[in-house]
Amino acid sequence: MRTRTLKQSILLAFTGIIVLLGASVLWLGFYVIKKDLFERAQSRVVRSLDSARTFYQEEINRIGESLEIADLNVDSESLKEQLRLDYFYRVSLEEARRSSSEIVRATAGKMIPLGGTRIIGQGELAGMNEAIQKRAHIKIADTPKARHSAVAVLETAMAKEFALPIDGSDGNVCEIAYGGRIVNQDYLLVDRIRKLVFGDELYKDKPVGTVTIFQEDVRISTNVLNEQNERAIGTQVSAEVYDAVVEKGKRWLDRAFVVTHWYKTAYEPIYNIDGKIIGILYVGILEGPYNAMAARILLGFIAVILLASLLAFVLSIVLTEAIFKPITQLLGATQKMAGGELELEVPANASIVELNQLAESFNNMTFRLKERESSLRLSNEKLADLNKSYLDLLGFVAHELKGLLSSAVINAYSLRDGFLGMINFKQKKAVDSICRNLDYLDATVKKFLNLSRIERGNLEINITEFAIGKEVFDNAVQTFTKLLNQKQMKVKNQIDLELKVKADVDLMQIVANNLVNNAIKYGRAGSEICISAKDKGGFVSIGVYNESTPIPDEMIGQLFKKFSRLDTPEKKLVKGTGLGLYITKQIVEAHGGNIRVEAKENGNLFIFTIHKE
Image (tube, rainbow, N blue to C red):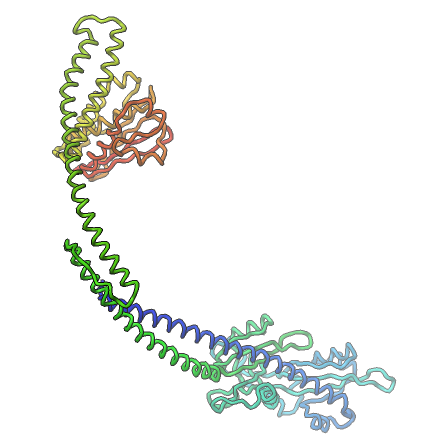
């Protein structure tokens, strides 16, 4: 890890904060600007779509109004020219009911004027003049992201049409007059809509707004220009827009790449009079003007941020210098203190109040440390003397008691067993009690002797190879045969006779004696103790299980502490020093192993590990 000076770190931290805050503010400003501008653009394009739809519908209504006020008895060609219609027909009521125009059929059925948009089939187009057929004939261009079309040429046409019932001399409807304008390549229509909705607004000599009418997914009338600067007739809408608008009948509002530029766009379905979707009405607004406006605002924003950052950086240098000098003095003083020099005093004359308080606190600390060092030196000397006295006393008392107890135990057992003469029943009962207490005292003295060795650090380990089951645990079981018989308990030693370990055999005997003794003392009368071993490759795991009350999880941590005994009914009935498991743990860990206890359903399993090699 690279290290830096305090001055470098402070400057780097200030710089990092300035950069982070500047970047955050810049990003926030950019986000707000873009969000505000482009939300406004999207709202505008939605309003523009509404206006375009209204204008388109008004175009249909104007055809109807023109038919209603016109003299329909004049020559049809003259009428078409007068009303600027691409086609005009008068048919009988019976012919109207069989007409290919759903608008005419609906008018004949309801006997009311109706207008709308419809698709003119190829057969009907064949009966119209050549100019209309030419306008309807549009080659479909291969367009990226559009759905695949099996048709190469558009042979049908979209028309704005209005049908009008005509009354006969008897006052009943006898004919239907209808006429319309072909939308295909009707550039006057889309240009008028654009001018009405967007005016003459330009961006880099390019109209800001565009309008398109699609038949199905093909552009049939548009003021969107292609790369050749021609109207992009025959190009297709993307498959995503087609699916949303034509297939699902929904509006589609989003930014889109339209032929050559990015636009904020809005698409909505065009329905025929039967409610079937036959096309799409589109309006779009160039993103370029909004991007340019956002860039200008953002540049001004960046200039303000850079100026503020520069000012903040200069101030950070000034502040760093004010902090750095007194801290350097403190640093030098702490280094001297680390070397053991406590006769120190740091000047408290900085321009920052907190740094002066820090210097004063440091000076006070050095004074207190000198006092505490002196006090601790005296205390440590006293503790060392006390600890030496404790260890000497522990070893001396245990050693002296061991010699005295050996003689007392021999004499007590000789008296009890009649070697010194016959004694009566009451005397034998009293001597039995004495023998039991002497046995307990003897075990306690041995534990204190082992504790003395551990506390002094004199636990010498002499490694030899031996069969732990036969040479250690069998001996432990033999040692406590009398206690086993008294509680009518049995021991099952399942350790393989050939399983050998490398350890101090005498210390392992202490471990085995402690675990077997505990298993007998705290096990249920008449139960069985199970001793097992598992060969784990480089080490051996040995377990001693007895049937007894499972030890609660919250008490397990106390088991291996010095002079610690669990507060349970079973433990209160059995005498103990709280040293056996502590000594066992120290011996096992001195051999590089570990010991733990697992509470089972009906007992407890003590497990320790020892190296095999």
